Image (cartoon, rainbow, N blue to C red; front, side, top):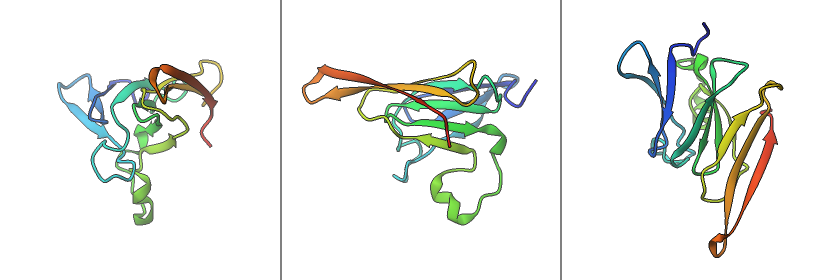
Length: 143
């Protein structure tokens, strides 16, 4: 039932999301974006959360410790890519929301009623550390 039905997604401290096929005991693909830094998963920090879209079974939202939220289209894994597009990330990287600042991990949630509407939040640490912290919430749709 759908592209992602047998898949499980997990994220870790290395900034890499691993897709697992529940029918075989090994990961089948790794999703990562270097954010321009040149190291595997190094551009986004630890993965804070992964969540499948309720409206498109092949789309995964991933939040990270860098405050980025990445949308991945697993149906595009292995798709051909023009050389000039390679710096933007792999073909399965659908969208990067980079509007959160701070060092605390971001969280993300899909709307259950409005397709492609997401909420994401992060804690912005104040100049004196956590005692001066404040949070931020974004409601957004990828363009």
